[in-house]
Length: 346
Length: 279
Image 1 (spheres, rainbow over the protein chains, first blue to last red):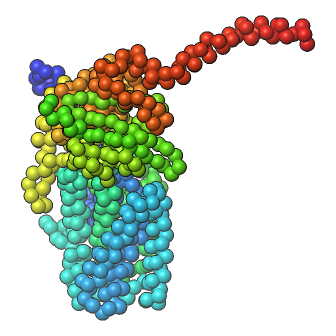
Image 2: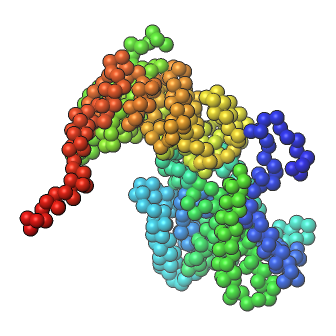
C-alpha cells in the first residue's frame, strides 16, 4: 500500500497511511483482543459459531454494553461511577413498586423511575462538582446508600426481598415490547437490547466526535483547568455525564424488570466493575481524556464472548471471573503497548 | 487605532486583593493600550498571578477600580472576560495535551453547522482554519490531528496566542510565556507576542525576565511583595536599571556586598589552624 503512494512535494503534507491512522485509534487494542478471543472460542467450542450462540453472546454483551457506553464517556470526562450497578436495580425497583403500589399504569412507574434515576445521577454530579471530593468517594457513598435503600424499601413495601409481579398490569406488554422483546431477523432470534446498545454506541460516538459537548467531554477529562480557562462549562459537562449514566441505568433497569416482571432487591452489586472493565478494555484511560464509545462496545463484546464461550466450551463457569481478570490485564497491557507504538511512529 | 489611545483597553487603578488577612495585592495600577505591550515584572510571590487572575475573571478585586474600555467592571468568570475581549494564556494550562491541535484551537468556542439534533461541529472548517491561522502566525504544522501534547512548549504557547488573536481578543494576557522555554523557543514566542501587538491587540506580558520584557515592552510595571515597586515607560528606563530594580535593587547591592565579604574555605581552615595552638 505504501509503495503505491507517490511522494508529495511537501514532506509536511504526506498523508498518514490508513494503517497508521488505525493504529492511533483508542479501540485498536480491544479489536485485536476481541479477534483473539473470538478465534480462541471458535476453536475450543464447536457450537460457538452457530447463529443462535452468536445471538446469545450479543445479548450478554448488550446488557453490559448499554451501561459501558455512558461509563466510557464518564471516564473520558475523567470521573468514575461505582454506583452504576445498584442504580440499575434501583431504577427497576422504583418503576415496579410505584406501578404496583399506586395501581397505576406500568408506564407511570417507568416515567417516575426515569425522573428518580436522573435525580440520582444529578446528585452524583452535583456532589462531585460542589465538594471537589474524588468521584471514587462520592459514588462509593451513593453505591452503599442505594444498596441499603434498595433492600430497605423493598422489604418495607413488599415484605420480601423481591417485588410483586407486575406482569398482569396495564401497559406491561407495550413496555415489555420496548425494553425486553425479541426480534427475529433472518431466522435469528435477537433481543431488543442489542438494538438499544447499537443505538447508544452510535449516538455516543456522534456526540463524542462531532458535537461541541463531545469536545468538552474530552477537555474536562484531559485538562479541566485548561478547559475552564477557555470557557468550557466544566461542572455542567460533568453533571451531564453523570445524568447520561443514570439515563442508561434507567434503560437497563427497565429491561431487567420487563424481562422477569419481578426484581430482586439485592441484584446489581459488582456489575459496576464489569462496566468499567468493558470501558477500560475498550481503550479508555483511567486518567481521563482518552477513549471511545465503540471501544466500550468491543470491550462489552469481549465480556459477552468470554462469559458464554466458557459455557459453550462446556467448562465450569466458576472459572469465568478468573478469565475476566486475566483478560482485563492482557487488554490493558496490549492497549498500553499499542498506544506507545502508535505515538512513537507519529 | 492610534487616535483611540485616549481610552485604555484595560485600566486598573489602586487595585487590591486580600485572601483573608493576607495581602496578595495592594494599590496596583496599570494601563493597557491597543497596539502596546505592558509588562508586569516581579519575583516569585510578588502578586503577578493574583493580578492576572483579576484581569482574567478568575478572582474579583477587593478595592480600587477595574475599567474595561473606560467602563468600570467586575468580572464574574473567565467566560465573561472572554466575552469582553480579554483572553488569557496561561503558561501551564493553555491547552489539553491529549486532544488534537484543531480541537484545542476551537475549544470552548466551537463553530457548528446544521440545526436541531443535527447540529454538529464544522470539522472541515475547524481543521482548515487552524492550519491557516497557525501558518499566518508562522507556525508550520505537519498535522493538525496530532495531539497538542506532542508539540514543543513554545509551539503550544503560540497555538494558544494564535487562538486568542483569531477569536477577536482585544486584550491578550500572557502568564510567563517564556518561563519554561529555551533561548531559541523564547525568541519564537516573543515574535508572536510582537505579531499580536502589531495586529492591534493590547498585550499584558507577565514575566520575571527583564531582558525579554525590555525587548518587546512599551510600559513596565514592577511588583514587589504585592505592591507596586515602580511604573515606567520604555523611554523612561534603561535595561540595566530595569534589571537592577527587578532583581531587588538595593537588596541586590547588599547581597553582592555580602557575597564579596564571605570568607572562603581557606580562610576558615586558616582560622582553625590558628585556634588549635590556643586549645
